[in-house]
Amino acid sequence: MNFQKICVLGLGYIGLPTASTFATNGVNVIGVDINPHVIETLRNGNIHIHEPGLRTVVEAAIKSGNLTVSSTPEEADAFLIAVPTPFYEDQYNEYEGRKYKLADMRAVISAAEAIVPCLRTGNLVVLESTSPPRTTIDLITPILERSGLEAGSDFFLCYSPERVLPGQILRELIENARVIGGVTPESAKAGHDLYAIFVKGDIIETDATTAEMVKLMENTTRDVNIAIANEFARLAEKFGVDVWEAIGLANLHPRINILNPGPGVGGHCISVDPWFFVEAAPELTPLIYYARQVNDGQPHFVVEKVKQALDDLKDKKIAALGLAYKPDVDDLRESPATEVVHLLHEAGAQIKVWEPFKPHAEMKGIDMASSLDQALANADLILLLVKHTEFVSLDPKEIASKTTARLAVDCVNAWNVEEWKNAGFNIIRFGVNKSQ
Ligand SMILES: NC(=O)c1ccc[n+]([C@@H]2O[C@H](COP(=O)([O-])OP(=O)(O)OC[C@H]3O[C@@H](n4cnc5c(N)ncnc54)[C@H](O)[C@@H]3O)[C@@H](O)[C@H]2O)c1
Image (cartoon, rainbow, N blue to C red; front, side, top):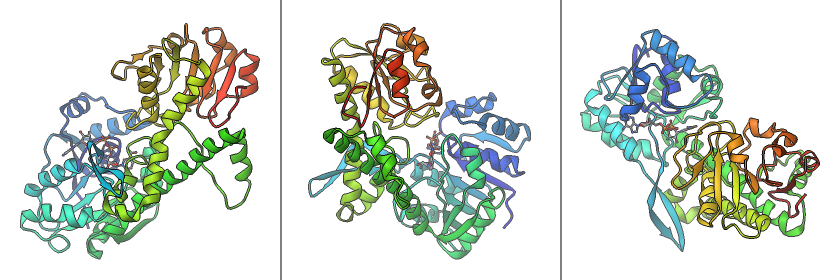
């Protein structure tokens, strides 16, 4: 199939790199977003998200004349949906006492509805948003068929999960293997043709529901594996063991690969996607459900750790380093670090937060520092929440000269205990039940 023009709905972390990469590969792309700020920013030649290399690709795409942005879709050969699929913050269902979260598919529904008037015979529609099993068949197909065209025969329809790693999106978009699930084999073939424009990794065709499940299985496996690492950290603390040492030794076994424990699991994917399985089949997913509970409970363990270090949290000054959900990104969505900060604030501590990737983050009631030095000055305790590269490489001697704090809690095993001790700090590490 030949694609002259495509329309990408949703210009966020996934849609914008995808739209720009198609554009720099010679395709005429209309990037659509309902957020006027996004459209305005891109029209002014700026970008609204941080992702290494993204600015260069977006600039090249716009300069080539192949990428234009709009608030509404228009006729095209293919439509890609890359809009958010979060869960509802305030709606739950329950199964045998297990209260679970529900997928909020409103953005996907309205994106599909917006495509209907533009849909023509022979078009291809691809859903990229991470979605509950059977979304393509049960939710998207009936919406698109309101056009009077039939999915799989009049137009092609696919689900293709995005599996890129934030921080490496532009490289992985091109190099990763891509799974294309069609509602018919012909649809999968059309999807294959589209992504072959720039994908250098394998492109594997399957059916739509398998492709949906593949994505959810990947993220659910990560979540469950992190949950077991977090339980190991709790057990290690109970038994006076250093969990990091124990994990390192266990991982010497050729068939064991225990992940890192930490303050929790966040982001738009791993902390969200397992709920899609639980909602779709609560009777079959107790393990997935309890893994979510374990990971969601981690911020409380961090607060306990800080409490032990300071005796009482009231009016204690804490310099919190990092808010992002993982190292070296500016994404705060579902970040456990933000929850830790809120919990400490509620417990009466005076928090100053330094997040180098988002220094002006809006955190209700929380004082954001304008520099690392400002966060550190007058602190009673330094709390390391995110393993940003610049935090790992901090020189403890230099830090000691900038702060009154001589206590540090390291939740991510970033700092060399001996070096920090030699600089005069008492280091408390997550997963180790002793001050070092
Ligand atoms: N961010 C990641 O690393 C990642 C990785 C794999 C998969 N995904 C999945 O990709 C999807 C998109 O994620 P994201 O991180 O790019 O989200 P995002 O929030 O960064 O961007 C989504 C964009 O879609 C826009 N939007 C919302 N409704 C719209 C509509 N009806 N029409 C047009 N635009 C609309 C929003 O304004 C926003 O700019 C999600 O399902 C997510 O789970 C994300």
